[in-house]
Image 1: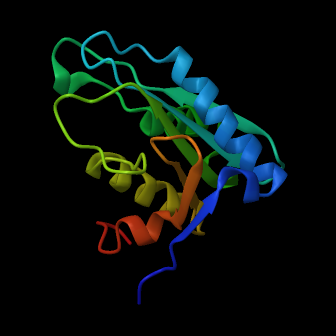
Image 2: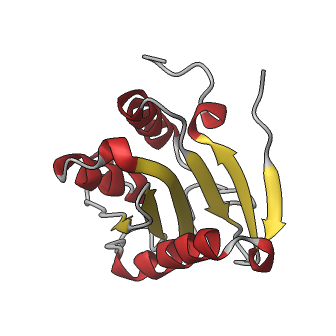
Length: 153
């Protein structure tokens, strides 16, 4: 059974959702992306309403680069807050010349598996909000819907 996917205008989001997406957009300015010039930001929402952001950190050896989602989730884990994550928003600025990224900024396969692992630690699904390339719409789904046959779930 697949999860529903909802596409909304940014203005139609709840104030909490809009703040989460705006924080992810702001996090793109902290990205270290000298090679791809594709600046990604991800912001986690915790059950108490607080947030924590991450940004991608590239390495000249591409395989060692860290995605924004992984940075945010690893930081939450290091702070002992992984069980409190209820949502993640993802935004990007710039063009990724190596691949077509699609209309919405979606997690890569590795990040989908990292999110699946976070779901397993949390004991509940995590809402995923993906900003559109034009910055006007958000596609909402869940971590389980992004990777329905994840290892460990």
